[in-house]
Length: 191
Image 1: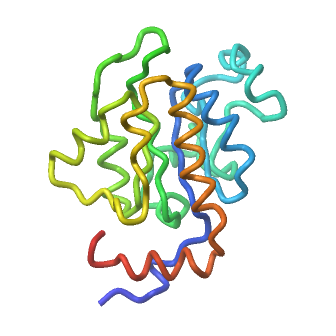
Image 2 (image 1 turned 180 degrees about the vertical axis):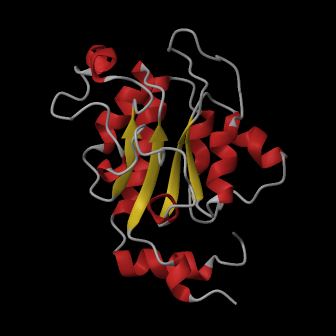
């Protein structure tokens, strides 16, 4: 039996975006307005490589690292055994596929990012091409449809889909941290 302390969260949302792209920069820009987001952006790049994303993140230090703790230098960038990765309720999965980014998958492509959300025992919210959530559902995973409205998965227009994804995130951002922790504990068996 795990103690409740192990499952306790200190941030509502986790969003890991090592590889920068325009669609991810647009998501990051929107996420900056949410207080309880633990986010990385461009952590695989040197600062000069990220200047083309400055228009979307003008006031951010780039690369953006999780609380400044996960850097290439200390080897913790990928160590998801660290509490900083685990202590979030929702995982905003910025998948590798995009309708508009150059040099990436344009089709539904389920990567390790999706599986990390389940491995970290977090409720996934996807930023991906339309239909990806439906394909994950076909694999038999619990997508917590009673908690998250994944209807954004059917929205074809990327800007409209981003607005709908952000609406879902903002709905859950209004929960108190106590409510979020109670939800996490109540879902223990489903995770």
